[in-house]
Length: 240
Length: 104
Image (cartoon, each protein chain N blue to C red):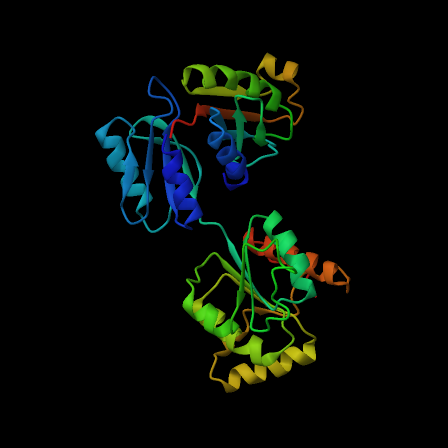
């Protein structure tokens, strides 16, 4: 039933559409299609396979659900790559945010140039821990539309260049810690560096929903809550 | 899918057979979205869920024969279905589930 291929693709961050016959004697027959046109398996009817291939390689991937294809009921399931969260700044808030974000289904990477903070002892639970200049790191890894970036370093030398990389790459979410005064300073610096106002307006600052908390774990939860709202396409209501 | 992966990997590495149930249709209020999955192993291991707990027991029971003979099953639970009351579908909606054995 193509489980192994599906598993490999999901772990590699690829999109896949699975078509499964949902009725009749061929119940369970499955065709997997990747958006680049590769496929595996069959629905055991050539014209069914052809139509399914067309659906899965269109610009808008089909929604998950039952649908009639060539008169046959087929369960269509679009698998999106795991959302990935880059946390810039191996600070106290980040330790808690890794917990919440992973539990919520984000692949979570922590990056900081300061090796005293970015230690395996502090982040045994992160999917990846990277000691590198955040801007350099974000510039060399694939950032896609399912990427979320949170900037927590409190250090504009580390945050701002990395923020710029993330905004220019068109990631799904950019959030930055700091007071409104810090944010005004940040905006001025980014404008000076040639970043457009419309990209700067995409920064969620201060980061997170307004849960009224100030403790690191509370800020982490507020941030995680905002990630969930964005992932679900909600305009966050509890915004400060 | 990703929520059941680590358990499924472990069971399969142990040489167990694994069946996966997927929510393929819901009507009315349904606690789990389309595509939600529950995996069941030979040894009775359970990962993930296909409802808020109403139909899991019945699905696990049905999964036994799927584990045995490898033939997929489509199961329906809902208000119109008398069995549904006996397994306690209290959420008031309808759920259909496809159960299949992982054969690679």
